[in-house]
Length: 289
Ligand code: C2E
Ligand code: MG
Ligand code: MG
Ligand code: MG
Image (cartoon, rainbow, N blue to C red; front, side):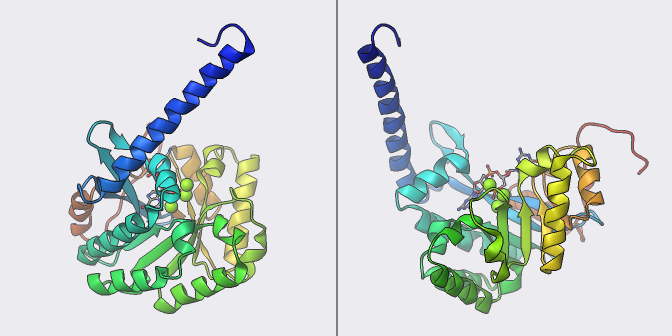
């Protein structure tokens, strides 16, 4: 226990940190074999057009089922993969699998794939994207790459070249977690985004018209519209949030109120019925429809 003099306390924290480091090393080791052992899976969360409730695409979200620890969140293992040089093979697997799956879906649903800044900094990324599309026979405009603002912290000439190479392939680009990074807005002048994803942290508090979060969302929507970009609000859980976000003219919505991420088979079952429309669910509220 952390009792007694400073030295004892230091030892306590030190062994705590030691334990955390050990834990991380163990996870890193397991992560090395996770792909070949078939422990990785892609799930897909519907992205819904706000006006119509029609599903226009899905976001691919990776899941790792660890043999002993069960399902581990990507917010835990993706950063480890990034630091341990494992994000490249993992990211390539995600791209190839997402394209393969999407090519077999009924209709023309888009698939959005999260791309780590470390993948984005690798000059081979366009080659891998083109190869994944080609191997799957997927039209480039059905693939959307989600990138965060942090890519703008590195060399701007290289970043611009990467954007051009990806746009030349014909894929769509989305700016993920908008408003949470440390970049200036200046990059929006030249970056060819098709969509801005409004971070959940703004959506969470956006239940009251006139609230500060509502004002921020309205400003993001105005910015996106002026730059001819679509918007997606992430992480919508309640009817209050959904109503407000619709009133703010956000074009697309995503969140548990519509659907959690689902497996590929479940997605296909839903999409086979024709145009895939989902009604918002969740805590009951007096509604007329
Ligand atoms: P993200 O790209 O911003 O993805 C949105 C996250 O919000 C997902 O978490 C999703 O499951 C979750 N979410 C969706 N709707 C709701 C909601 O209504 N309420 C709440 N509370 N959460 C909601 P997830 O799947 O745990 O992924 C976390 C992050 O991990 C992602 O954030 C993304 O940055 C990263 N990630 C996931 N899959 C991949 C991948 O294949 N490659 C890379 N590089 N990163 C990935
Ligand atoms: Mg994302
Ligand atoms: Mg996000
Ligand atoms: Mg995120």
